Length: 422
Image 1: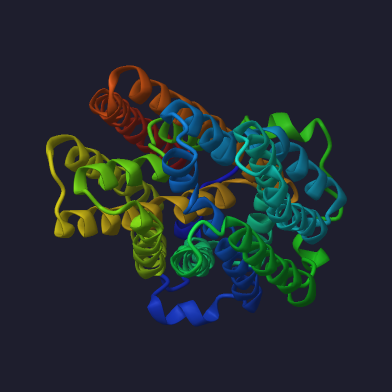
Image 2 (image 1 turned 45 degrees about the vertical axis):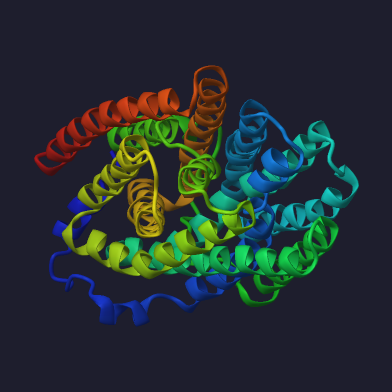
């Protein structure tokens, strides 16, 4: 049975708990992978930050149509390929090469946006291909992070990577905003600039990230189809995958949250990409402190607190008829704090649970569960908004989130206690 991170820290209690000063001890490989994600996220967020404006306000698509595209962006494509890519990376032990293929596909798709024009069906195809690239690369990349990190620093390492990732997410919308401010409606220029940044991300991975040390992977334990059932023998892994699925169903897409904030705040639509900037800045600011706290105080409490913050955001959107500048800034700050407490922390929890020889597959299973939930979330929220109004959509997701927090809190606590006394 695979032991979870808290138990491992108790077993090796001779090691000092991580502190902010120990961030410097994280492997240089993590920083290099972070630079790959930095450039890639500049590229991705240049596109994603303008999608609500481009699709809903420029092309006048309905919330349901935007929800379909957003669901493909956040969920469907990852579901299609993530598990296969993870299994191939573990079986071939070529994590870097599989990740490179995913980053390369996403880069090429930025050029395809030039040909898609304003036809929303073609946009779904292009966005789907771009997210297939994400589905291919994410699990091998996260496996590379975990394979180059000792267990007691796992959350800190993921926090560093996510902070650099958020830095790219911060700059991407700024660049998009400046380009469209100087060249209104010049989306073709934006797509081309996005492609150039994506190529820089591919180059950073290819040139500066080494292949994992063969010594990190047991030579006598290769993955096979029979390895998959062993993952589900771990109750903690099953609980993490289930919680990831349920929480993603209860999570409203950023694009929808920003559209609600823009509507209630009366903000000019041209400033919508700057909402992504504020969220990314908050994420980058809080990511490393959240990771250090998770390694020192426990990853489960930090993870659950992150989703409690999301519930607070729902409450603000629901009960405030008008949103002023301070409330708007507060919502964006809280959104970044929510990401800092959940994304990297969950991957650290999973990485500490799954053994090295099948880690990419385990992370891919978790990513697939989350992607399924995000797909359903985008479609459900868009449908409720389109059919009944945004107020009913927010109420529905608030109720779902409260229920999931209760279930996840109880289940993770019970499983933690069983493993502690096993």
